[in-house]
Image 1 (cartoon, rainbow, N blue to C red):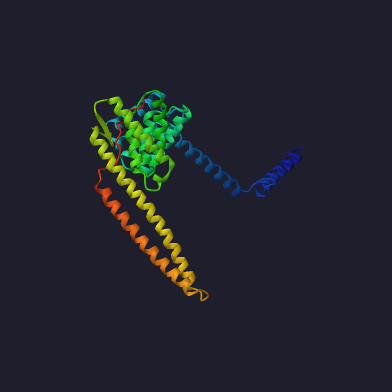
Image 2 (cartoon, helix red, strand yellow):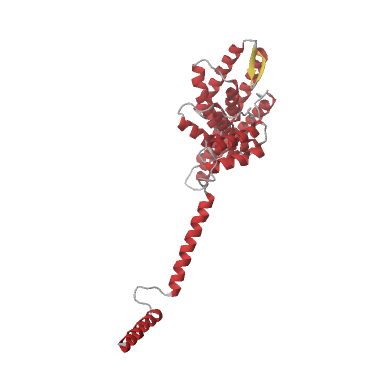
Length: 333
């Protein structure tokens, strides 16, 4: 009996030793187990790092705290402390990247710090978010922010559209907005020669003049607007007349020069074609030679005409629109 128990114990020890020294099928080696453990540890570390970048339920500020931070940031803007306001808006946007008021505020900070590309991006995104929240009724200041950043980012015709879209419904109700009219005028004044050829530019110029007349009628004190200033009506009319005539002369001279350039290019091509082959008659050579001389003469005359028009334009009074609009920013209400 004792002998049997000893033999069974010996067999069990032997099986254990074999199991330790020779892993059974399906089991992993010590190196493989260690590698899997390292992979799980790396995964846990990555999850912890990601969680650290996201505000947890215990660290996320309350709605009241967010509102206070937004109020503080806009307070800096009203006081023209843009460098202090910007990081507060960054903090707010880390909590909510679609906070339209924070986007508008950061866009204002960047505008005032001459960071026009990023300012326009923020202002346009804020304007879009406001528009989706209340279609057709964007906040006035959001329109102003989107418009002035577009002007300073060499996109004045977009500002023209933004201003008119806001002004026209109010005008239909008999409400006029002189500040928005100043933005519209500045945008039109900043438009380049190519933009001035657009139908929107011509139509908006007429709209601007008609709106000016309504503002003068509303004021009814014998003055009219010259740019963003009020002058005696006769003086304002004289300034606008000289400026408009000089500008129209320049634009006509540019058109003439463009056409002369096309004609000269055609004459040069004809000259090369004729002189490149021996199959043409003397009359063909004479025509090509005279055509090139005539085209060169017309081009030179057109260039002289433009130079003269530009000189007269420089001498004409220029409407006093600002190089950079400085709105009176207020905290969104």
